[in-house]
Image (tube, rainbow, N blue to C red; front, side, top):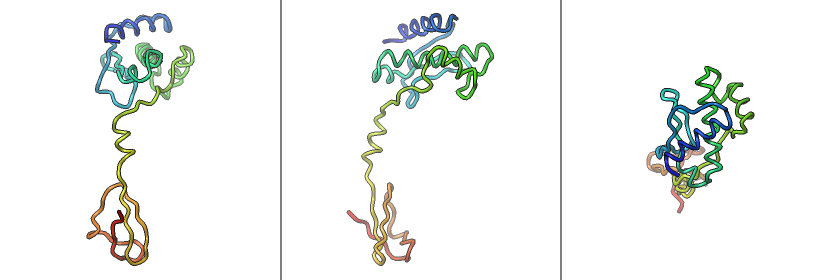
Length: 153
C-alpha cells in the first residue's frame, strides 16, 4: 500500500462511517515508533505508521484510520477530540473504532530483553546485588555491612 491508496482509503472510510468528507492529507510516516498513527492538530493531516500495515495488515490500518478520523472530525467540529473526552469515547463506539492499536514489535524491545544483567556479592556478609547497568566496585560498597563488593560471572 502506498500513500495514494492510503489517501483513498481514508476518504472512503470517512464518507462511509462518518458521512463527512476528509479534506486533508493522509500519508505513511516512517518516523513513528510507538504509535499506529496520529492526527496533526495544526495541519489536520493524518499520519499512519507503515509498520502497523506490514505487521498486522489492512484490517489494523482501517481501525487506526477510524480512530484518527474520530480525532479529525471532532476537532473540526469544535467538540472534545482528546482520548479522555466523552464525545470522543462515544464516537469511537458509534463507528466501532478501536481505542488502542495493536502493539508494534520494535527491534529495540528484543535488545532490551536480551540485555545482560550484572550480579555483585559482598565479600563479608554475602549480600547479593543484581543490576542492569555495570557499576564500579571500587567506588561502591555493601549497604548492609560496608564490605567490599565482588562481581560474579
